[in-house]
Structure formats: structure tokens, C-alpha cells
Length: 502
Ligand SMILES: *Cc1c(COP(=O)(O)O)cnc(C)c1O
Image (cartoon, rainbow, N blue to C red; front, side, top):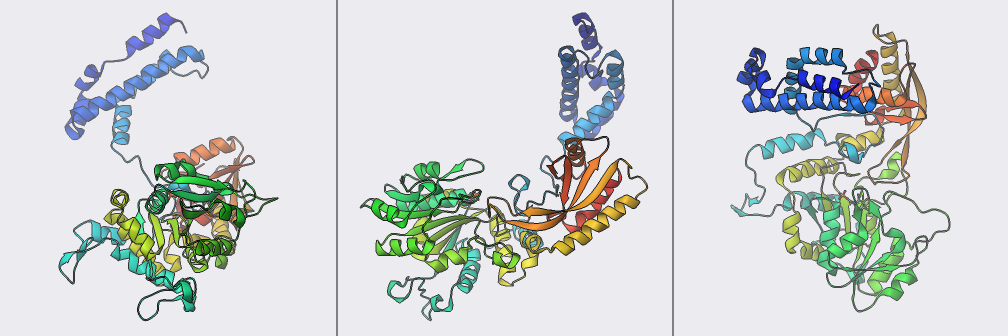
């Protein structure tokens, strides 16, 4: 198209003012206000201008927005403005159907909350609450009491009976001679990155922290142990090599500036082959011998025995504390299945130092988080594991998933509107725990595999994303894969409807 033609197209576009004067726009203004309508008009016109402009570069490759299609677009201008207005006034953050089979999907909001959690949020946060008010004394209280009591209960239950609280409320985690003076306590901050920052700053500011080179990890979203270390004003003392670190490496690095031994869980990768890593018990023994605290950044921190769902080798919070780790840090919205939060559990004297650090004030969480966390923890205390969605998803049997998948496929195949070009198959596959939890933890599942005669897998997956609500699927080897493990059963109908209409 020539430049002259292009100019002619531009001239056909009305001005914002002209449009604002039209009767249908006036009606819209009465409903939605002048400035919102004017803004939508400007957005629609800008898009048209851009499409005309692009046309030059692409040499009409797509055959759109020539004179005829521009006329068509201009005819539908009011409708476009209304659509734009509706979109700009609707939520950007919206619920989606997670059919990826990745239970803790960082991009999809990690852990969905238990129903009890949002009931509790609604009940306590829509009005006033005793967040920091001691109802029995009628005076100021502490916000951490609400969940600390539940963590105590849960973590105490996980410790062997010989290490339980004695009658004076004292706890020994490491045998009688090294009795720890008080019970385990837990504080809550904004996320696990904040938990690590606070713990390092409180326990090691101005001193050295010893970490294995094999554990200098980066977790998605640029959480890097060396960076957090320097922000906490502690000096990183690396020992060993990427693939092999021995307890003697830690021992040799200890000096008068050492404040802490740190173990970081390799949440999102594995080192295999010629490797060596000291056992946690060896590190505990060393820390004890040299009178240094040992901290473990667990990342995921399960409060639930993952072995019961066939996931081995993923340490839980109880495992670490039982072995004698002094402080563990973990996320609220990974394997725990609660709200975004960073949890620090361990020796009460060390936790008390973190609580009195002014950083704690800056990193603390709000009442919504406490409400969601308290409800989630209460489900654990009641052993109602199916109330926590991520636990329910992990516990879902392959049979149950297969049954639902078969039902969806047969319903779609018998739907009148269903395109003959769409093919559905059931195949075996694997769900992923994800979210920087267990790097290699997978659960067997049954997948619905989709192919379409006229659409590539990427196009098909884009169609699913454009659905309301959007359906997020995996694309593998030219197929779109739907894993019902992460789809709530009440959402199966959404899949049926969408697939029947393809
Ligand atoms: C996920 C993870 C973090 C970061 O936790 P957030 O809650 O996302 O801040 C830190 N360390 C490890 C080992 C992790 O797996």
C-alpha cells in the first residue's frame, strides 16, 4: 500500500471528540462517566492507528485493514468502545483452570487455599478482630499467638515422644545433655525469602555463615542465596565443591567469626553422579560440637508425611527438627498448602532474637495471612488433610483421575456440537508437585491428550487460554495435555463445555 493510501486510511478515523458527541456514546457516558468512555475511545482509536501503521510494514500480508476492513471496523466502533470499557473495568487478576498437573504452579498462584481459609478471612477481615488484642486481659496482645500455638501442637506431635515437652514446658531435641530451654516457636513473615533474610540478619550479621557450594541456589524470581546473604550483612563462607562437600569442609572453615551453619534444600534441581553431601545428622553433630546454630532453608517444608503419597526423600519440617536442626525456614504456600508466607520454626531463644529484630516489623504479615494460615493449620491439627487442596490433589488416586477423564471424554464425544476435527485420547503421564518443592517428585496420572486436524497444539492451547475462565494446559510433542489432578472436580464441566465447542 502506498503512503498516500495509508494517509487516506488515517483520515477516515474520527476524532475522539467526534465520537464522544455521538448519541450511543452519550448514552454510555451517562452510565459509565465521561472520562472512562473517552479513555476507551482513545484506546480503540490508537489500536486502529497501529493496525493501519503496521499494514505498511507487512505489505498487506494478512489482507486485513485495507479500506474495506477499516470501514467494517469503523462500523463496529461503538461496540468496540463498549468492549474496551468492559475490559478496563473488569479484573485483570482472575481465576483460571489449572489443567497442567503442576500442583504448586508458581505462575498460577502456587497453593489454592482451603475453603475454611477464605471463610476465616471473610469472618475476621471484613470487620475488626483480636489480631493484636488479648481478650482475657483486655490489653494489647501479639499477632503471632494465633498460629504459634498450632505450630507448637503440630511440630510437637512430629517429634519423638522422648523429645516432647516435659511437665515444665521444656523441650529436648538433642538428648538430655543439650536440653533446649523452651519449646519450639514459629514466627511468620511475608515469604520464605524474607524468612531467610530475617534469620540470617538476626543470627549472623557481621559474621560468617558457612554454606556448601552445592547449595548456592537460585530459586525462580531471583532469590539467590549469595544475594540474600549480602543483604543480611552476613558474609558467605563457601565450602566444598559443586558436587561434593564433606563435613570436614565445614569443620575446617569454622573460625571465631562463624555465626551459623546453613543448609539449603535443593528445591528445584538435583545433582546426580559423583556427589557427596554430609548427612543432616553429621551437620547437627558438628554444630553441637562447635556450639553453633544450624539453620536449614527447606523451601517447601511439608507438615505432612509425603511418603504416604509415594514421594520419598523430601524432608519435612518435622524431620529436620527431629534431627536437631535449630532453625528451619519454609514457605506457607508450597507443600504446606496455605497462603503466601515465610515461616521460621525452631529453638525459641533464636526465634526470639528474630522477633525483636526491627526487620521483623518490616516483614510481618497482615490479618488476611494469619486468618488463612490459622485455618490451614487447624485442618492439619484435625487431620483433615483433604480440606487442604494441595494435599487433596497429591492424595488423589490414579483411578479417581481416570474415572473423571473417561467421563469428560465420553461426554464431549457424544456432544452434538463437538467438532469431528478434534481428537481426544487418554494416555498415562505424570503430575508434578512443582513450585520448587521436590525437584523430581512426580505422581502417576491419566492425561487427556488433544489434537485437532486444523489447529496446531499451540493454537489449540491458545484457544483454551481464551476461554472464560481460561484453561491452562501443557503442550508436549504436538499434543495438548490436560491433567485433572489439578482441576477441581467442579470445574470438569468447564472443560466439557469448552471441548464440546471447539
Ligand atoms: C521457594 C524457596 C525459597 C523462596 O520462598 P518464597 O516463599 O517464594 O519466598 C527459598 N528457598 C528455597 C530453598 C525455596 O525452595
